[in-house]
Length: 142
Ligand code: MN
Image (cartoon, rainbow, N blue to C red; front, top):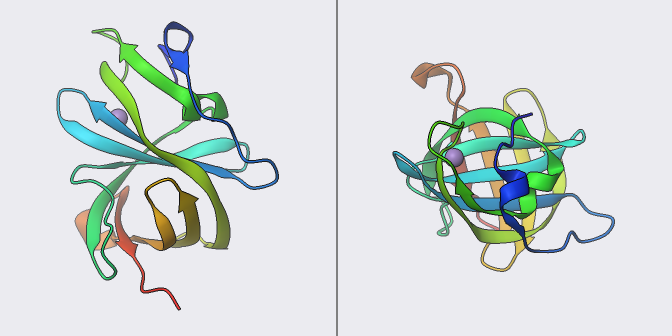
């Protein structure tokens, strides 16, 4: 777990009781990207999604698995100082809860209920691209 800067920032959002949370944080770091985080096993499993989370069914985006973060980080917005891990500005782009349909080593399927993101999303490990590489795709619902 690594969430430097947490205490320096403000907290926003409220967890939905009973269901795990997800958050997408827009991160204006050296390279602009979005951090997609899913609560699982007491931590936030995390991926950096350079081009943002797909919103059109069938659309897929590269997602690079990054370090687990503490659950509290789901509410973080603010600036992480230069020199610290994740230096740059973090803004919550979406927040909500989800149901877990599958959580396997190579495949994760969730149904999101956020302010912006809704419906079924699938992470599939993208072995050809290398370690920690995944594809995130929005599935066709129903
Ligand atoms: Mn990041």
